[in-house]
Length: 533
Image (cartoon, rainbow, N blue to C red; front, side, top):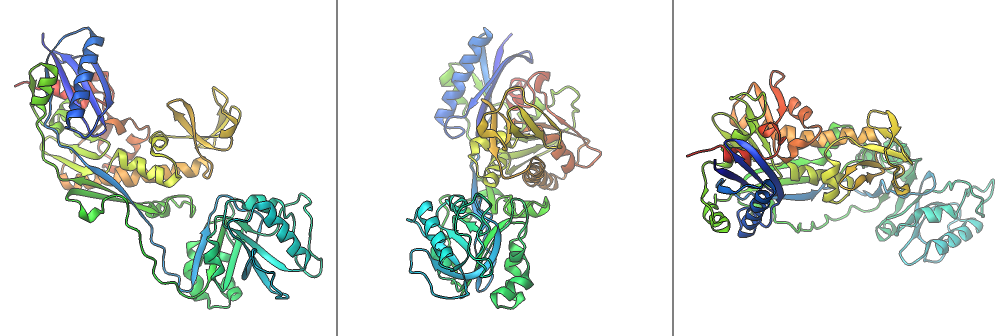
């Protein structure tokens, strides 16, 4: 009985199965070292074969590997181009640390300059870099005491809350007089930080508004009211007001129409410079509109996945030298994947196999296969871009439902139900969304509610996976009665629902269980052990 090692060197993961007479003896995987098909990747594969051989207590007699086609899938983030708004421009919107509450329209005044003598005019104080929060608050309180009408404060740094906390309730009306001291009440002057103070100082007028957390803007989304306050026609502010829908804080400036800004070239290769077999684009702005997400609640960028042209490489000779064994290339990767996937209990011989990898989606039918760009890596990049988190964390966050940690052991699920965690969460996780990670609970966001993030996450999966699968089906022309998903991303908890929406209702959708024991992974590796000849 010959023990065969099926070796699948993928773009992100290398998987090996040891089998004899189609019986699985051992299986394991490691991250692919170097580029798929490189000498480093094959050395890592050979080391994995030897490790599994020792674990299983057997001797491998031969190995099988498919011709390797390296897939260079690059994800390029293209920032959204701001819509033209004439003399008006948005200087800040949805900053995470505003202070105070209120709205005003006034002329800019740099806190570092001499006080203005304009009696009765409302000014927007600008705090440039170099002035600390305590000094800024002291100067502002002095201005309030002198009778100056300061309607809002814009800060270049990130100390808006600290300044607002030191202003207290402020009333600059002549009837009641200024409130000069800090008495612990809420600041009634809107304070927004992380603002381009130089750009604000160049404006003729500034419109500033901060609303309570979660409440939408009033003045800055009302084109008629804002136009009247700025002294311009309402039609001129309509586009700007629409762009600020659902934000809770924003700053807009009125000035001369700016010249078009130069666009920096991305660090990654430009898409048009790549010789590609396929290209797939995800527009995060379109996802936001589809799921009715709050403005600012999802990334505003486009992500592009490209499948580069590459010739197949035959790695059998190199692997044979490394292992000291006969190594065959009996079939292609899609053929091996189909053979492995169809060992799933209940699988039909005419089923459509959907192999989801890091870079590509392969649809493999009885007669043909289609390989398209855009899969697990693109999904991870979209989640990371949306939440502003590292891709390593996004790889866990994307996989399924989350909870919001209410403090201690209490949590709220995405469907609104509440319960208790098995282990107390750290105090830093209170109020944050969290998922199960490699080391326990992984907090990742405090800007979204559980239900809102669920809608956004499913919207991203629809745009990356569902739409790409529909595109592949149009390319292949095959319409199966059964579909089986394999590959690393097939372990996603929500994948079956995504596939069910992508395929006609009559198609039975299932997750692969290779050999009845391995789950959705190892389809190619096990399939290679079953091919003879």
